[in-house]
Image 1: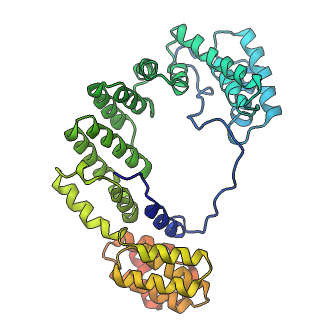
Image 2 (image 1 turned 90 degrees about the vertical axis):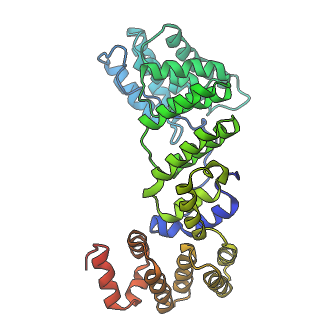
Image 3 (image 1 turned 45 degrees about the vertical axis):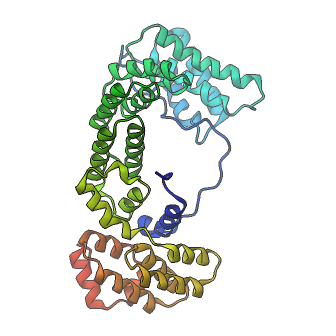
Length: 382
């Protein structure tokens, strides 16, 4: 199984950015080094163990932590103020979990704003870890400190212990069952890993294609652990979960999956076989995209046309051709490309999604009766 997504997949997905977002999107500017991404602290949420009224210092301190100490948008002065308020709140109420967790989060995120060589970085990390460990050692019935400590624990056996405590206290935690399954599988407890991942599927509703990729990666690990049947069942589950995704997205998911994961599931095999032409054999499409980036528009048009002639299924070919003709100031040609694709598209949902993504200049250049028919079909205002 190749890494997801493959280089070819990434190139093809780039072509669909205007379609999927309805607008050209520039890559975000590089950001300075920050704390590694992890679920934010749940400090504003009242403690599961013992909900308690927060003092004014605690309330304001927790608010500032969320606004000023976050990895994205860190404000040192604001975060320092948050720490002072929380330290005062801790002095008055040392057993308040919400205050403790917010203070730990402030220390942890501040540490990543210190120089890697500075002693203060290590000291701040240790303060945060000390708070989490203190709450864990105390045996709090609040799942949050166990979860936070598990995120910062490298030893799998220690992570398993912490994560088991998380899911026992909060069975519906959106991430803990998944992390527990991963840790159990790494520790060699395949049976427990299967059960934990099944729980994750039960309590964590499908959100987007990244969930599908994560599920398939776990299926691959199960297969390597000698559980091909479990891997196939999970793969079949993914096939059902992604039915609401755009066809191009589903194709990109499957193109990077080892067919061994679903070879025992004939219905999945058939679905994948029918999908793959929409995102494979796209060499000329990728070439056209490269030429466009180099500003060689006429050559890019020729390459995209060759792609349509060789494999007319990939939607990116038409998206690119429309964009290239608009770039040349030729809306009539862009409209011809759009009409050709829309007429050959048999899936109403896909056809309407494509119609909605067309450039306004393309729509204006299309035959009026065709546009009106599409608007009725796609329930758009006339």
